[in-house]
Length: 160
Image (cartoon, rainbow, N blue to C red; front, side):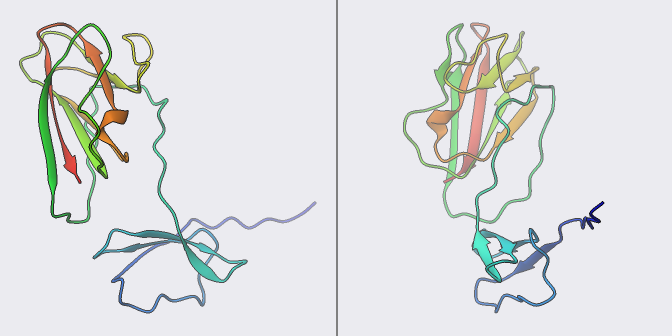
């Protein structure tokens, strides 16, 4: 029987101008440049840090969850409001971004369902009760769609 040792990944932070350590680093360890937000995973075969973008699980069903994130400072913020309809609609037109938080208006009377272009009240990524929010790491605001009760509203904000 083969013996496999499993290590928990370690996380490192540094400035983009710092020399990145490559000794005593384990495969899969992660590093974030705190001044740029760039992320890297260590590839032990290559003996180097390799850039990567974290993925978001689009199948997660969450009711009434507020996701808090820590973020790198960006110069431009995105913000907007949208009246929810009974048909799926994108939060906004083609706007590049890094991070978007969607919040259901606290005065809403129903749920707001968040997901991709095919979001429905029975197939969604997040089900937001009034006042709750969800945050996504996405490349464009038009990737996030909402559907819900007419007369309900959402606000959204994020990093461009």
